[in-house]
Picture 1 (cartoon, one colour):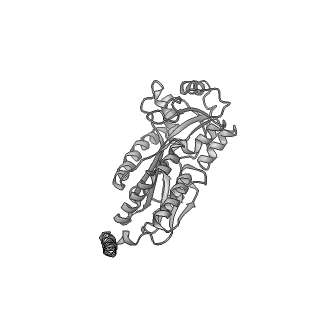
Picture 2: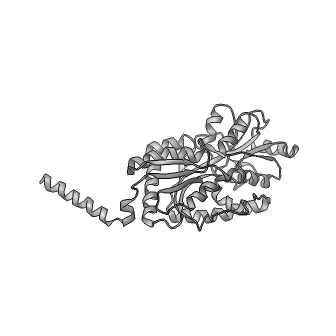
Picture 3: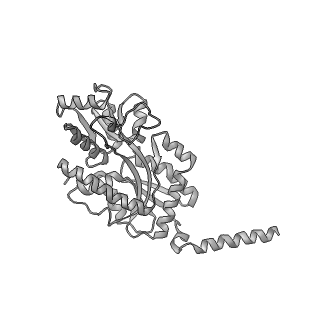
Length: 324
């Protein structure tokens, strides 16, 4: 009877495998490359190196994290768009940057909707509004008052055209102030510019910023989420400031592949990402950095990309800022 039961389970497992679409049955059968558009140490890089080993455990083939830096992520996006649509190459990016690029850059070699397959939204973390400890403000109203009293005196290090750049532009528009933007090569460079006192003000993803806040190198002013972060109950949101209702920004980290990926491969990839980010260990690691899983179906992610592209396109247009 025991032998019969083993045979039955083997038959059932084989039948289940055969009912999978062909592409999903054989994929992945070689290393998976996840391209990161930023240097090591940024939010996307941290997430890829957190999730990659879990994918390897689940599927076998190694996940290779490939940092391709430049043009605010456009180089990595272009490489991904031109790769074979077999599921073995994808890009893990701050999707706010992705949708903003189409409005910020005069010319791009790709179209965010036409040339990519939405695979999975991974996580959300609020942007934090922080400053060097020497900047004499503790609240958003104090910051706005200082900016109005000294137009252009405060500087904000940013990767030009990034989500945090547009968050700062959006706050400028709401407050009626001006500050100087200092171009950097990514989030980590922006953080270190402020942490060392060369910069004044910072919008940045919570995941990579909070270690510097805890170390006293940065002073936390507010978070840009809809509600206060449970781990930072005494830190107000930007939108709690009178006149700033609805000011919500953040780092939306997600995975895209080349256009026309097999649907069954996309669904398999999506399901595994959602499973991993819902495991207690990964959720705990994310929560420690103020980050939460944000599972979506590929179809939901596709709609999100269109909505956010239109939303931030209006902010960029109102700012008049363009990158040629």
